Image (cartoon, rainbow, N blue to C red; front, side, top):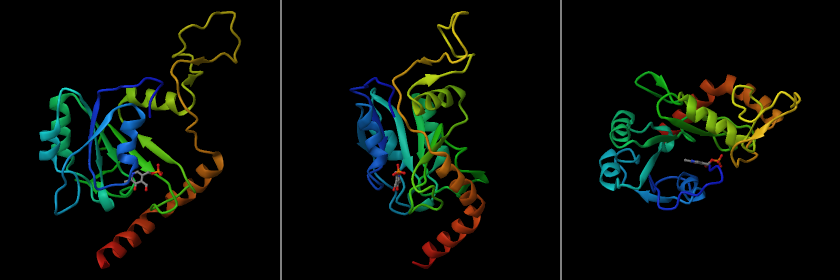
Length: 207
Ligand SMILES: Cc1ncc(COP(=O)(O)O)c(C=O)c1O
């Protein structure tokens, strides 16, 4: 996602064993995806290889929970903290997974979920981003809807003459809104998540 700025020269470290989207998000921003190696046991990104690929241009790590196995969160967190990088977790495959008792969505700076029809739960299409960092939440919320805010606490140029309809476009954003119809389907799918996740895990174990 990007807010109308390009970041040429920036680098984002990710894994080559994933769907195209995990690297494309860097390209959308004008950044360069850099592929680290994987751990042959889990097929997930190898933290040691992340470390080896860091340069002065690195800004973020996109780690993918391949087939639902959570990445090595603590090691990646440590590397990101040491180098001032944003830790993004692609949780398209891991929506019901936990790590040391903590639910996915709570582990990285930003976690991305997919509700494509082949995923554990679906809204027909669509996705979600979770974060516990308020400044990142504000950016995601702004980019989601054309960079526009009506939040009175965030308005910068409102005058007493402006009406209640007043809003500001503060970034170049997008229409990334999910429809109410998709959201209604997702609410019912969420109730079935534990069952769907259990069936999927059993199917994987049997392969
Ligand atoms: C690992 C991974 N990341 C990202 C995506 C992209 O999801 P979406 O098409 O909902 O944006 C997928 C979809 O298959 C995926 O498997």
